[in-house]
Length: 329
View (cartoon, helix red, strand yellow):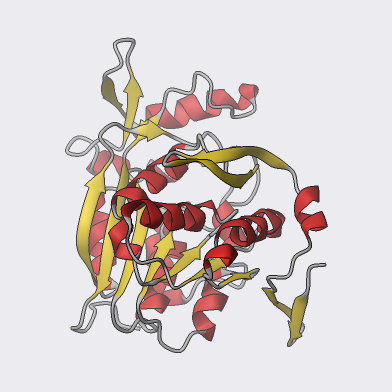
């Protein structure tokens, strides 16, 4: 059964002895086959569908940078069903590189954790790779750490303003990840939907020791200079950067309305949103047009079909700056 350790009235972490019966009872969308090993069976939870544009791009860039993970701990904030850690195991095996030394998967979405446990039992345990799944918020996990050494921290957290409504009438998904509130010093980034990411990067900085990389994705809904100034302010340096060759489809359920106040100051220089023409080419559209199209998508239940709004995805690999950061905490 699932066992949560008690402590101060809060759930602590999900132990790794989940029963197979519990895993079998979870609703899975499909079984994935690793491209380099067709016999590899990876369970994917419904909440993290493999065709999701963010998931596809994240996986591709992790595969191309698999060498960074070799000989290090794999830590994923927002680890979901664990497939990213499993894929890295097989990427390193295919490349004949030393394996990761362990997996720590952190996710507050309890419903996806049985799939993660099943995947780690099937792929990490037989290779002697220890794993643990934490059913807590990212900030709680960071608070418990002393010093993080020899690790790659993978992050792809919600990017939307806190305490605002999205088109479906529900609170921003970012609130779910930090219901205790974002520290005040990070709230200025909330204008751009980046308060949660800022708080996570900022608090992680203080726990980061030697030989640590942060692998993180940001949406092109926010101008890149703003994102990169935030990264520098929080004490990180950009070791590598990659922008998607073509924009990816905007998630219909994540509101773009928050971009309207700042978009006019940037979109003539660097478009934030795009539409795909009949020829396949991408043409810039304004944030106002993107917002209007999203509102019209309400009648379709915010489905992806015929939702012609796209944005860039930017992947960064970060290292800790040794000098003081500009943000005064």
